[in-house]
Image 1 (cartoon, helix red, strand yellow):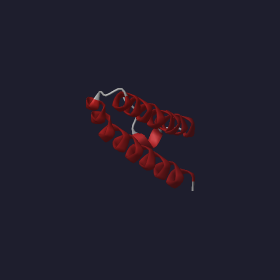
Image 2 (tube, helix red, strand yellow; image 1 turned 90 degrees about the vertical axis):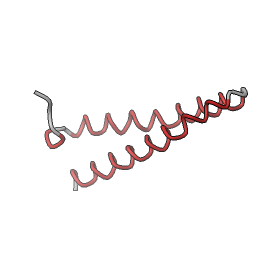
Image 3 (cartoon, helix red, strand yellow; image 1 turned 45 degrees about the horizontal axis):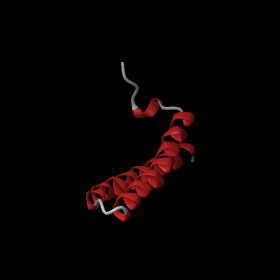
Length: 68
């Protein structure tokens, strides 16, 4: 049976935040590297950067409401 969001512990919340924080620079690096090399299809990763930043913002807001 899957766990719902209310049963997540503080450690799993921080793990989600850390994973998102690490993904943003990685996706950005891949996008810039591909564009520098002339592979303009690397620009398809830009929406993923935006999605990752949006999810990171929501995770931080959620963790703040749970701890406060």
